Picture 1 (cartoon, rainbow, N blue to C red):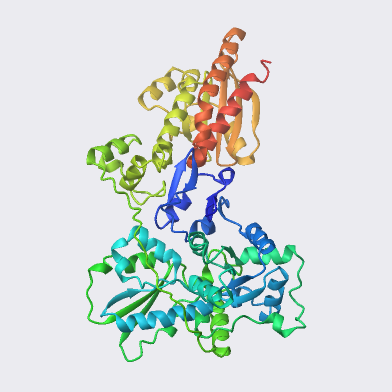
Picture 2: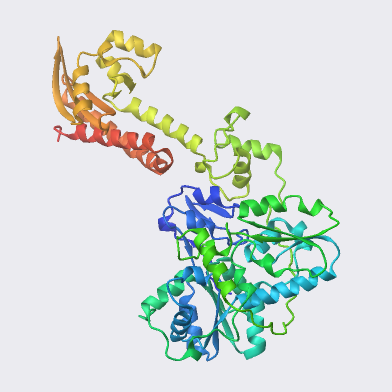
Length: 569
């Protein structure tokens, strides 16, 4: 097997937003040093995380370099082309596409849909010989992985038949020799792990994106009809109903059951699949019920390795039109396609005690039921699920947004109070958002007494506590900062600087007593340096979680130190 898994994380791109955890159907993500890594054993390789990661940190393994090496080492290498190619390469006539692929070095191109038809035939025979009950298609490798790992009690309902890809590979090897190498190209990431686990049948799987890019890099023309017809046809023959497999319900067209009544249903999307499988093993039915389950919404035409962003309806139309247009060829006598699927439970087997969960919750500041917000900011559905992930070593404490927001608030409050200068934050209504004790003391004994009763003076009008609200109003209305404006009031002389945090919405003023001796000012500089040096790193670490709060703290502190250092230097 390859050392690199089909899906992996590019750590430098990961911004610890936890979107992959929120979206992962099986929570196969581990946070380590604020980076989200795939847990290989838990992953079902649906590829959903590669589609929703906002920074592109979740990558799909590129198998083209390996394919090139195989082409150099072996003469008989056949590309198994997924039936959804008709919607992904709709701009290229099929004969032209086949000819172009063969120019890459492949000896032949064959439709994976042939394997799908063999699977349908085998499943038909299996259903006829089996007693009434619920049976699930094994065509989707992602669904198979999910059942093996997270619903092993459903395994007896899984039809013991190879997937279309593996059935196709077995057909090609039986016809062209066991030394034939089979490469798969399609939109499915699950096929990559399937190929990794069955090297005896399929060497490696690449995506349609990889194939299109490869053709472009080689400069192969995709608009020139091939001169030789034999060089532009599928081997050993073209497909029929198997071409419908990539759309939801496509497999059901090939499940006939002859005279036996078979109730057929199709569901797609992992959320729907999980709902279908929930408690399914407890149901007893007198009829034979066959379920086609696909991990991607709408079917394989919407796989994570797809190229075209066009409408699902248009893609389905292309696939259906091709299947109706082509005349089915007679089935080749199928080789043995039966398979045995083994359980691989990945659910947490550790039964954490209530005491352990309570301790884990306490570590993130949740000491009562009221503290359990279940906001899913960490990516988990509930605070208790997050606590279990903490205990299992898959999560870190700083993933809790409410906890980190509280830490940021507490640290910002400490910083504000320790800065040896008056700091006043004001909003567009010219009301105090926050201020420190130094500012209250500078503004007079009456303001200081009010501050003792209501620390921070949040919501108090500036005009009620100082004589210069107009300067704040000017800064807010114009968006222009005011630097070192001298203010005289009776025997007091202040130096006021006003800086933008959010232009026209939020500013902070830095107020200094000009009567302070130089030595006191130098002490203020040193003290401010020390405060910022000790606390800024912590604020930066939680900035991505706290948005405006952290940005405000960072901006404020930088402005404070710059102002204090200004003319003193």
